[in-house]
Image (cartoon, rainbow, N blue to C red; front, side, top):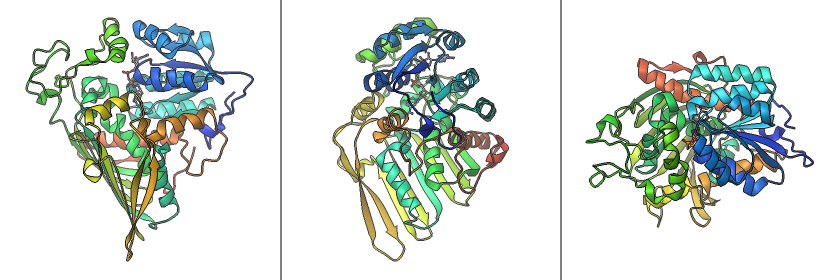
Length: 453
Ligand SMILES: NC(=O)c1ccc[n+]([C@@H]2O[C@H](COP(=O)([O-])OP(=O)(O)OC[C@H]3O[C@@H](n4cnc5c(N)ncnc54)[C@H](O)[C@@H]3O)[C@@H](O)[C@H]2O)c1
C-alpha cells in the first residue's frame, strides 16, 4: 500500500480508499495513546484502522485500547504482533533507546515505519537503522512536527528566498521552564541509557530545524554540559511526589493525583513495571545534563551557537541568522516581548495534553537587511500542539501525501540520523573534551547542500 521512495518518504504514501491502512503501534504511553492513537481514530478512521497495540505493560495496554477507542488485539510481544496482524505501517512510540529495535524489526518484516523522534540514541543504533532501511526498500518516516508549524515554515521560506543572502552564522537558544524542563527529570528521560540525554531527546527537534533551515548537513560539533540543578544536586529526595515527606517544602512538588488521565495511564499500572510517572527529580540515578551548550559547524561553513536550559522561569526560544545581506531574528513565547495571560503551569498542562492553547495569534519575524531599516513579517499561528505542527504533519501523511512540499517539510531517515548525530556528537565531545566530526559517527557523509535520501 505504501510505495517505497528514496526521495520523498512521506509524499510516497498512496492510500487506496478501497482498503484501510493497517496500523500496529508499539508504546502505548501518552504520545502513543493520544497523538498517534486517539487522534488518528478521531480524524482518519475512514482510511485507517488499528490491527494491534503492543507495550511491555499489560495494564497500560488495556487502558490504551479503551482510551484510543479500538477493538484490536494487544500484545506484550512485538514479534507476535507483526506475525499475527501483518500491518502496513508500524508506529513506534516507545522510550527512545528502544526505537531502533522496533524500527529494524518492522522494516525487516516488510512494513513501512513511522517513528517518533528521536530516531535513536547512539551512533551504532543509527548505523543499524540505516543498514536495515537500505536493505528493506521500505519507508521510514520521522515525526518531526516542529517543521510543520507556520512560524518555522515562514523562516524556511525567507531563508530559501535568499532574503538575507547566504547564512554565515546562527545563535539559537531554547529555554525549558521549571514545569516542562523539570518533567523530563521525573521520568526515564533523566537517564542517559534510556533517552540519550536531552541532547538527543529534546535537541533532536532543534537540530532538525537547524539542518532544514540551513539546508546543509552538520560537519563538526563541540559541546559543554553539566548537571547542576536536578538529580544529586537536590536538597532532599523521596520515592515519588505522592508520598514524599518533603512535599510541603519542595518547589517542584507535582500532585499527579489531580490528573485523572495520568493516574489511569501510569499510576494504575505502575505495579506491572515499576514506571513511576511522578518520580523524584532529585533522585541519584539521574545522569543527564541540565545545562547544555554547543558550537556546530556546517558543511556549507555556517557556524551555530546553540544552548538548552532546563530550569528557566519561562518556556520559549530565540534564534538569529546572520547572512551576507542581513539578519533575521525570530522568537516565540518570550514573556517580556508579549502579553501572555496564561500561567507557565497552565501552558505546560495544555501542551502536554495536546490541547489548543487559545485562539490564533500573530507572531513576528524581524528581517533586517544591511544598510536598511528592519521590517516585521507577521505570521498567523494557531496555538495547537507544537505550534500547529502536530496536526499539519498528520494531515500530510494521511490526507495529502502527494501534494507539493515546496518547503521540504517531509522528513525521512537521513534527516532523522543527521539531527541525532549532532546531539550524540555533543555528548561524545563532553566526554572526550574534543570536537567531534559527524562523518566519524556513521557512514553518512555531510553534504554542503542537504540531500533527501
Ligand atoms: N514529537 C513530539 O513532540 C513528541 C512529544 C512527546 C513524546 N514524543 C516521543 O514519543 C515517545 C514516547 O514518549 P511518551 O511521552 O509517550 O513516553 P511514555 O513513557 O508515556 O510512553 C512510553 C511507552 O513505551 C513503553 N515501552 C517502554 N519500553 C518498551 C519496550 N521495550 N517495548 C514496548 N513498549 C515499551 C512504556 O511502557 C510506555 O507505555 C518518545 O520517543 C518521545 O520522544 C514525541
